[in-house]
Structure formats: structure tokens, C-alpha cells
Length: 110
Image 1 (cartoon, rainbow, N blue to C red):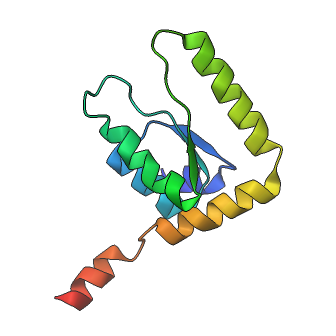
Image 2 (tube, rainbow, N blue to C red; image 1 turned 30 degrees about the vertical axis):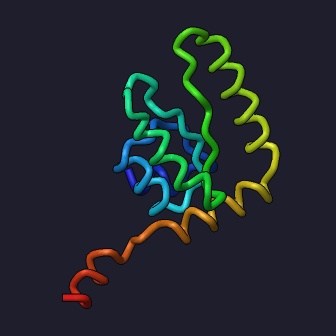
């Protein structure tokens, strides 16, 4: 996945912990659609970490209105794909969040 993510201008995906970590490690702007059926909304919390740093946006997956979800996603993608400076800033923010040297840090700590 890392080479595919690195080649992307923007990624659209769910917001599981591993996905969010991969988006950040790859330094790719993300549009997160958190899985809507988790009662604790943990995927929204995962995505919010990237949003707070400027590396992602959240599009709600409205299960009662797939057309609304599609429209919101389309508008978000048009905005991001039409604004290279925004994508560059989001990619830089993602790289700041990503901890690609985590194993090295752990070894050094130990």
C-alpha cells in the first residue's frame, strides 16, 4: 500500500487506526469517511487526529442518504483536486503526523 499511497494526489478511505497511520506515513492528503455503524464512533476520532493537524478532511457517510454522501464527497474532491497548494499543505501536515521512524524511536528508548 505504501507505494500506491505515495503515488496518490489524495486518498479516500475509511478511518481505521491502521488506515489513518498509513495515510500519515505516506504523507498523502486524506478524505476520511469514517465507518458509520460503530457506536463509539472511534473511526471519527481516528480521522479527527489528521483533521486537527490539517492533513485530512472528514466526509460523513450518511447511511440514510447515500446521494448526500456522494455529493459531499464529490464537492470535497473537486475542492482538493482543484487546489494544489491545499494538497501540498495537507501532505506536509500528514508527514508531520506520521511516525515512520517509530521502531527506531522505541529501540533508542529501550
